[in-house]
Image (cartoon, rainbow, N blue to C red; front, side):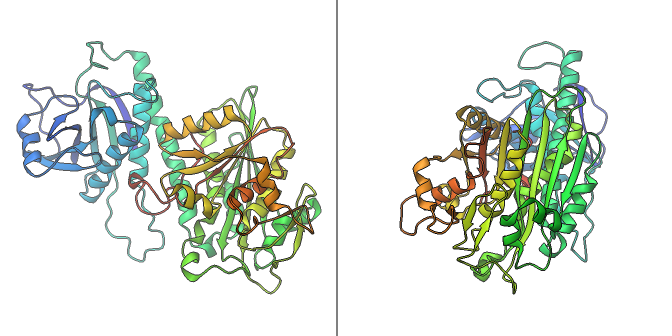
Amino acid sequence: MKILYSSHALAPRRGSRSTPMRSSRAVAYLVYSEGEGVRLAGGALESSLLAEAREDGFTGKSGTLAMVRRGGARVLFVGMGKREDVDGNVLRLAAASVVRHSIEAHLPDVQFVLPDSIPLWAEGKGTLPSALQALSEGAVMGAYCFDAYKSKKGKRAGIREIVFGFAGLSLTGGKKKIAGAESVAGKQAVARGVVFGEAVNFARDLINRPPSDKRPAVLAAVAKSLAGQGVSVRVYGKAELKRMGAHALLGVNRGSAHPPALIHFRYRPSGKAKGSVVFVGKGVTFDSGGLSLKPADGMMTMKYDMAGAATVFALFQALPRLNLSVEVHGVAVLTENMPGPDAYKPGDVVKALNGKTIEVLNTDAEGRVILADALSFASSLKADVIIDVATLTGAASVALGKAYAALMSNSPPLEKNLLNAGARAGEKMWPLPLEKSYLEHIQSKVADFKNIGNPGRRAPSSGGFSFNNLSAIGVGPMWIWHRWGGTERGHCWRRPGPRGHWCGHF
């Protein structure tokens, strides 16, 4: 699917003559809702077409779509809701709605006619490129379909080309023509949106795989395939992990027939690096709960428990095309959590890579255990920032529901930056307290820490969160933990299934 941006007029203004539109093409227009009525967001079109859509019940609500035939082609009106509510997510949803309709209707070519004055956002600093990037992200993610395991994939026509452009040659309500620099910026924004959208879809492909098709060795091979263009990959297998002393990861893996792996990605910019950051991802490729076995219903979606690692993989799939001036590391810890004959048991003590000992009281609280090794490894890289991405713990969903992802940080500036990035990416996050007194909840009588908080005590989940930080305490770099289990299957513009929430906007 080719996605382009044109600085030339795509569709005629009212009263002009046009050549007939091809029957294989869809032409989409943005529409606002205004009270009981709807209004075309930009360009000009025969009012009778929009009136016809209104008669059929089209209201202009965000994400809704109406189709009217014009000659042999189809004119699509896609709702954006109220003008003042338009943001990046509204534009993503608009583009995704058009793409999905076009795929189902077997329309391989789509013209997306933008308003002459496109709404801007992001704290009053939104730009045309940011709007174009959001639209192209939505188009790519809206086209996603995971049918690799379907015996009959159906006749699902793909889209050859999507063109974003304007009905006229003016921007932001003025008479100014699109300048060369603005045209270049628009094309770059669309290209960047494609990179981000493809990375999200890459993560979703990994997350959607059946658990037996993404064991640690399989994902290690995927990681190696990402090497090149500034990205290097090293895989640490079971023997090396033993030599390193990563016994927290090895302990969780004991019940599985498949050995664990720790993946270290590294991206080096072509010029001098202006800083360094490490992304850490939890990769439990299937989580049965171990001997603290989950109920059957609780296991149905546990192939998603490697979504943090998938996020790290997707980041390094995208980095070579983003030309960043920052050195980026990725650390993904991969294992199954199974109740095998040698499975770690409640009451066992394991030693993490940094020498800290952990009493295991619940084998289903395994994510924080393997991340102790991952964060210890990440700390040894001496980067400026560590960003930890994981599907843990369930208590965050109890606190925040499915609309918000949780985060914690030892750096207020880093926390603010991530919240702002999340807002631009359409990912809502809410900070939770990193309270030192919560460490008391995870003090063990037989080890340095225990992997669950005290039953019946307030904020036990926060005690678990603090445990997640144990290897970063006192190490030095700014650290942030980003938890989005429970939110990873949201947003209808990303289609059903895990949404592939990822770190591209960080």
